[in-house]
Image 1 (cartoon, rainbow, N blue to C red):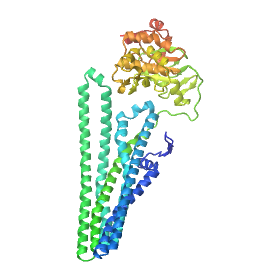
Image 2: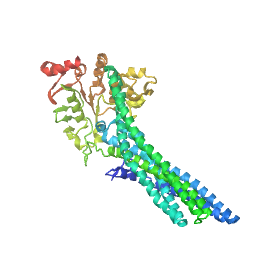
Image 3: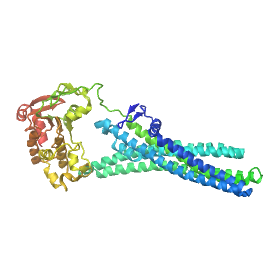
Image 4: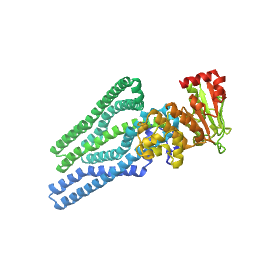
Length: 567
């Protein structure tokens, strides 16, 4: 068992779908068991109405006893009031159970995404997480919600069976044996429905992920003429999802038909048998009326039971998807006894490449292969496990939260989120106006703010789609500068801007980060020329370092790399 982020305990370690659903029910015992209790009272009151009507007919009408008729009329009134009150309270508890299960699932999904961190995109498709938050929570909530009606229906059927057995053994046996038979017939449809729903859910998640990828890269697709190809692929997969949906619908239509046909046939059988017994004088007129009432009443609990089977099946399929996400373990975990780091900027060293980033200086890293620079940045930020030290302390011995606080890696995969630009640049609301202006000026992004309606209070659209690629890059750089971490690793921060803007950023970056440790991974001569020290990496190893001009003269591979970047 483990604790969840909100302080609740007991999340099942094995995280099987069934145990997860049971755990959700156990998180709200008051409303869960109260809902079952009110459901039993609600259906029980309905089950007793035909018996009360039968007694009123026999004692009041047949026996011509006005007092008995009044008494049973008052009993019917009481049953009606009880049914109305219990039904209202059952519904309120059911809604509370639905909401509790659905939003606990949302919270655990968000917690799992946070635990996975930067590893999430490589482990789970974006559409998978979106589908959990939009479709699966409804199915899981429905599985918890139906328990109140399902339990009440079971008790009501049992009560009706007892009453019928006491009045007529053959009729009681028809109910006792017929209901399990009906449920067995319905059960034959559940297994294929379960499998087809799982296949449909997988296809839906894949299609959602593909749609998210297409939307995020639409501008690039149009630029390279790839929109028709991706559109055809999406259309093909959409049709495959439609086919899966039709396969599910076929079984669901059979299940819906069974919910009408089987209880209806059962009603006809009980009514026919009751009429024959009444004609033979084996049951009274009041009992015949009661039997008619029971046959009509049994349609409702039988339909509730088939609906419960359907909803529990859907909830199990959805819970399986949630459990699959919860089972994913983060690639990096905190040490049992985290080490502490000295305060202030410190020397950052990567043993694998031989890179040493001096404290409090602006260092540039030029790599012959761009992927080498990205890999080094990932190791320095401890997004992968590596032999990296800060202040001489191995980062794997430091708590991840401390590493994230002390070292910030800003690359071009970072997103701009919807909301006011001020909150986008300073999500923790820790910077004053002067610090924001200084960061925007260093990133040469003041013109973006001035052009945005509302300035810093203007709203940013989803993923900043109203900004060009260069504008987004400058805003991401400004956000990193506002954070003002002790150690900042920038990966190609000027690759999408024009030369004039790049020159301004290169000239201002050093002053903006004075006294802080900064590593800029770039092959831009404008930025390299402003760095206090340049490190050249080839084949994943540091092969030369020194001033930019000196490396141009003494290291041909560096000159070739920089020239390629310039062109």
